[in-house]
Length: 122
Image (tube, rainbow, N blue to C red; front, side):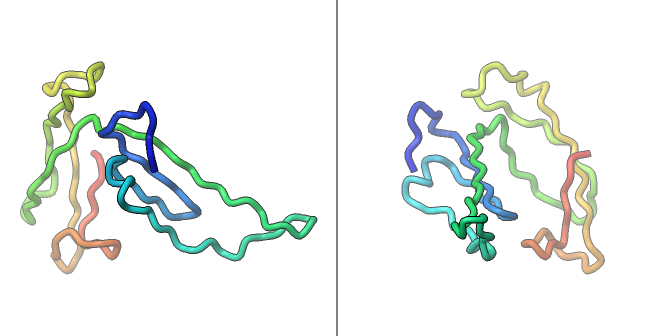
């Protein structure tokens, strides 16, 4: 993958079927995005395999921050620092994200797809 005239800090998001993969443009020069094999493709009237659809999005990070989760807290209000390369967005003082983290019955921490915690914007 090579991006011409794309900011080097761009994120590439690819959706194929029900799977989505995302990676930094700079990493895609060295690593591939892997997807599950397509379900048996249907054929058109002439017997040719139907075309598959791939959705590709180029995104840019407006802000990024790490959060230390505390089992005793459920609601977090995060000031989000503005990336200096994203002029045109509000100042860091204006970027705020409210999150609610709900823990599952087992009280475990955040986990993989099985998920012990769910985070959603307020």
